[in-house]
Length: 484
Image 1 (cartoon, rainbow, N blue to C red):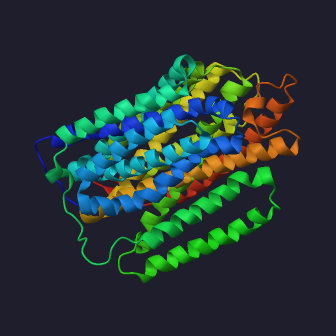
Image 2 (cartoon, rainbow, N blue to C red):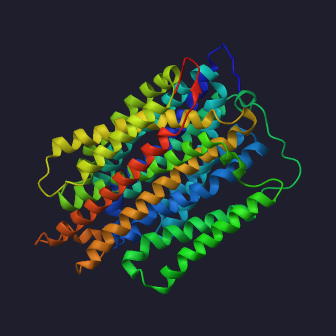
């Protein structure tokens, strides 16, 4: 996979691409601050409120691989621009939605656009950067994710406080329009498209796409609602074997057709398989706290949304700084050591979060949030670089899709487990699973139950992080200038 373009066009393309990632990540990071307010307005339980994020993430997962096929047919630039337009339209729909059901529907449409953008973004960055600078390019891209993570909570918190949560989505829609104009004007289709995969023959594997989306939806819904409706519920009992059956049918389907949605033979490469396992475990262990922290700060500690935004942004600062640093380091010295180091820090941070109570030091919490972001920046970029290096340029769309599928699958699993555990503890102690009631309980008993549930969450996340360290240790990849 060789790229020797000398005219520095890669930085022009990167600027346009990072505008889109800034927009989509600002949306995702900002909505976590707005979520408690949305839950209060619509009188939602914690599992119900979590579906604002879960439905979005499930949609992105379902769209990512089909988006790779769409990109092969339309070209990366056209497909990418279409995704940005869908995002803008969906964001406006969320802002104008009169009910929670319509909010979720608009969010799903918006998230389909995010999936299309994500698939093409990594592929375009990996295509325009020379091989020996790919880590630097992905590091700069991921640093933008960190900057958006800074902007999202701050913008979201201030806007929610002064103008209401709906205004936040009007802002992200405006950002998407700007990103679309930049894409049209600055991205050179002939350069970012590179080699196009042959699209003749059988069409896209819609059956495989349906089976994978159905499998994930069934399993995540069961995990997310089991603690609320009871694990002995017939629906919950049936959901897990149904999910496993759908998984089996998906695997059989993908191995039995000429052009599968997902070529599972790629996992015969042990290094690639361990890299993807590390990615899933890393995001599973490192995402739960981002979902839980706004509820802890707003409902247990009594901070306003705008204050929450300023408190949690330190994690994005750490990510923004160390993403670029780790990208350059992985180009020179290889990837494995940085992935292991970052995940070890993730585990240590989870252990600290498990000690939080109603009197925990806020300055210390902000410092650990910075360290959590730093850890994500240290391990994610080398992990992404090694994954993108695994395939040749003709299948870069699919490789980028799989990288994003794994990340989103880890995120959604972490959120579902976190919501389920906390809800289970609240219900077991006789409380309604309505997170808005935590701040209204003057006895403090509900806050104690929430904190106990959160403690169990962080212990589980720490165990997942340890598993990620073990799989990362098995990944051996070579980079120019160094090896693992």
